[in-house]
Length: 219
Image (tube, rainbow, N blue to C red; front, side, top):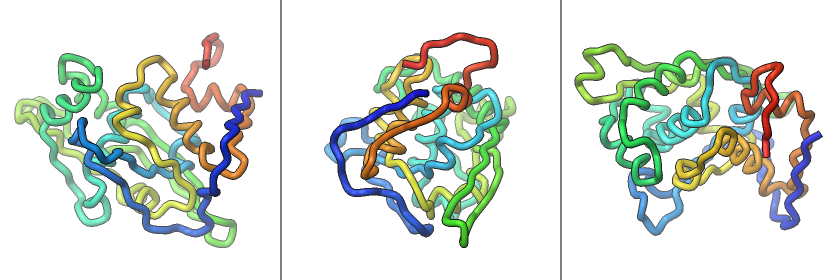
């Protein structure tokens, strides 16, 4: 078993019905005085994820969610300049070359998440890939990432029942093979009345995307 206990207790954050949530700050302002946070549904963080989903992919996906937050439910296709995305990651200790963004976007299009949201009487069950994107040569030459967050997933993100408020710039600055995933998992319980993450090792290995038969340190 893997158990994490946080001594400080605050008010519970668990929601019983879907509600509209808001992010804070601007993901583009690395030196801003307002803490940049984005609420991500717990089920999307800790339920079944299928695909070659890396720590850097988790960072990019969460950042893109924060970048298009206000348009998630109203705009289907988003366009962001690659150099603009790369500049934020570079300031927070990311790669010196922006080429990784295209590779990460491709992996995100092949990553599938399953979720269950809401109480039994109003359960919302779904499955979706995390991102749709155009990454062919002509688009890359344009310098713009053209993508969409699937509509069903966007609804869950903007109106979750249970969510974790992720600190985007803090998360982007994390390094280590499992650091981002562990941070997201810990945030999912941090503000509960009983802030305990109690999970079987096999389930933790699945969340961390540790291949079967491979030994790895998770802490």
